[in-house]
Image (cartoon, rainbow, N blue to C red; front, side):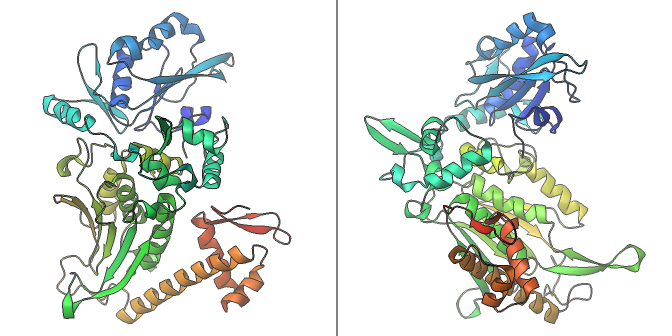
Length: 485
């Protein structure tokens, strides 16, 4: 996880949507470009005094130029850009004490230009100059208020789980105050208006005790069909229908763990005449589609939920809302715009938005590398459809019983095994919640399973950050995430 407070992360992390390194020798007029680009996108961090290759040259020898650089957000950007400055003590490449200037650029609610009236947008690790049409689209997009910032009627501080907020503060290293202080002083999660406490939609979705009380359809639904189309009536072919609720982070962890049990595999004769087992879709591709749906869906649309539909030859993720900002179906690999920047930032802090601003492009690359068709994006009046196609796409008989795939009997066996594992994982969580000191042998007995199966269930819960161990194997106990110890 990228930590902007860690000098090594600033020094060695790959430059990306939210990070750029600049020499302290850079001209003020040139520094304005990445500042404008980040302010027009999702914000970000500039590490001044670190070269592109990570070499620390520092700022101390460039005192006069640094003073000019500090004026850039105000004198070279129209309108001015909100920033936060932090000076970090370092040892430079010559072994001398020095300093690096970390400049945090906040997202602007207005379109920002430089002194030459040029508008830039951060796209991956580049600052892209916008043409007239793109600039006009950005103006329209910036004119829209973020729904995640709107106060939730009848919500109070009591509707937020302060223990969960405290856990989040520990995760990100926030130590300026307690959970309530964090909510009141960050991202406008909790604000006051005419002596009335206002709780934002983002706060409820991320930290709520029961988010679905206020957003009933802020959930994920997984549907698996037998065949290649969704049939209704007497021909209905739904074989699995599961709903996932709770806070957004919990939904993402739970649904990705579950879908992993549903992804089918096929065997292929590889190098050295060795059979390889290959999943029907690269894991990054389907997880990124799910995370993108949670991060970017339009939560103001209350009539439907995110739906993951799995067929014999493809998987489609349906997300409420049209593409935001400048993003269109024909430029989705290049442009990034957050409808819910606070939710995106939160997921990024948990390393779920792994390729910030570049995930869609990687989906295309990974699908191509796996020898699969390109992902397909379609947009209706209020829904975005993202589809991945497996090796059965376009075949007359798309059932998983062709020569190069697992046999139909074997596939059914694998699916049944996946269902049994998912059920055992949930039962394990329930048992541990009631008896945190339980041993593996006792757990296996309670599950009526083998010791290895009990260990597998424990590992699944640990991998999805739903539990962790405190203390030794003999005298320690299990801690269920989100519950007071």
